[in-house]
Amino acid sequence: MDISGYIDAYYSFNANRPTNYANGQVNDLYNFNDKTDQFNLSGAKLTINHDPDPVGAHVDFLYGRSNTIINNAATNGSSSDQLNYIEQAFLSLKPTKAKGFELDLGKFSTSAGAEVIEAKDDWNYSRALLFAWAIPYFHFGARTSLPVTKTETIGVQVVNGWNNVSKANGGATVGFTSAFVKPKYTWNVNYYVGPENANTSSGFRNLIDTTLLLTPNSKFNAYINYDYGRNQDATHTIDTGDGTITTGDNNLSSWQGVAVAAHEMTKGKSSYTERYEYFTDPQGFSTGTAQHLQEFTGTYEYKWVEGLLTRV
View: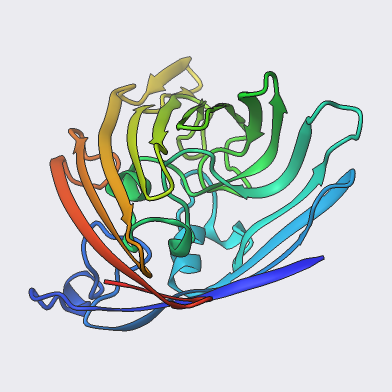
């Protein structure tokens, strides 16, 4: 078993001085580093991993603000069923003669998005609007991956929807993944579709996510990430005794956005990242308010010693 982990802490200052009474003393539209005008523990994580040979297991224990936000993000189930303090927990099967095929069963992070939950593995400390509002954090179910050529890996996932361990409507969400990897670039495409309205299997949610990662050399990387999501509201059939009636507006809500980022490494221990995003939520389905958003983030990173990373 391989054992690893990290501690991620931050201090945030907001000149608007948001109060706990007004909005929970948070930076609006942020997620894991949302608490402001104070020090905070974003995450303390312990990972236990055994690579499949042919059977493996992976568990991520997570404590802190990240855990709270991830496991309270249920869209079609109860947050009390979310395996609190566990970011991921899955078994893996990789048969020796299956030409690279792998099957995972359990709770795992989504394949969508250009960023991940662990800030140390992202270029910026704060997550993108697309990461916070356009895609899910995790799934519970089964996922597969299979190399079909030397550069292309595809996969199929059957899961309990977005951010759910247990689901209230019994309908499964299906995901399709593709990763095309070349020395100078990587192109990822993900598509999820399934019923996501609470307590009914009526109405489907669709998500298309794609990221083009450019790696021209070891000192400079860049990516372009695009997301488009659409949710159809539920309809319900009710037996009145004198017949059946259908309720619900069956309306469509959509959201989409694009993010562009560049990461430059210097000769020393420093690096710089710039990220720009445009995100539109015309019906307010994702953020709760009908709005169009733009953001720019600039990050300076310094690696003090092996294992200690600081970002501003």
